[in-house]
Length: 166
Image 1 (cartoon, rainbow, N blue to C red):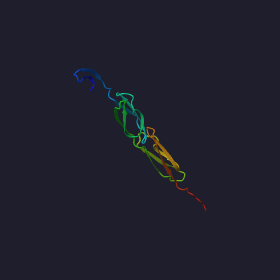
Image 2: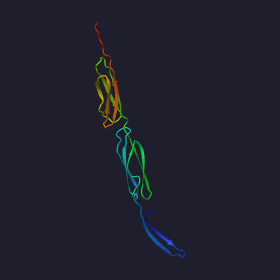
Image 3: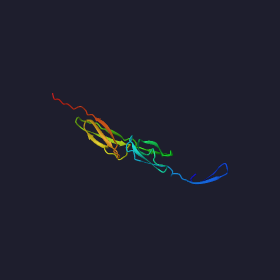
Image 4: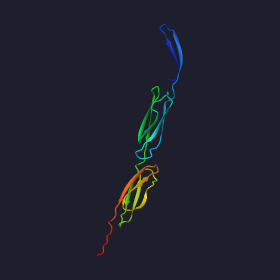
């Protein structure tokens, strides 16, 4: 126990000696963790582990990059005392993009493509209705965290109308 401790030693002849000593202990080892946010599905964030109390220096402190999930960190001081902290990193759902398109009625005409998004972090840019000619068209949608997803649609058209006069 900490505090003032008294020790009495008696030898074989009955002589005694008394020693008084004050015992102290370091402050409790305390570990803290701060973390960033995962912006895009499948991304990473940093977790910063710090310690106070105990007896410095410490092992297990610093900045660590991790994916989504539960992560435990053990910090040990120079006397072997250890403390564990657990942090949970979450991530947004995957940004998904879909597109539907109309058809070109006449050769050389246009059709509309409607681009929609879900998941990620709204609001989105790059969604809406677009008018395009025949061919392959790619659309990139970006969420508010800068995460992107691409959808590609192909618009076909009818063959040209050929007229001949005999």
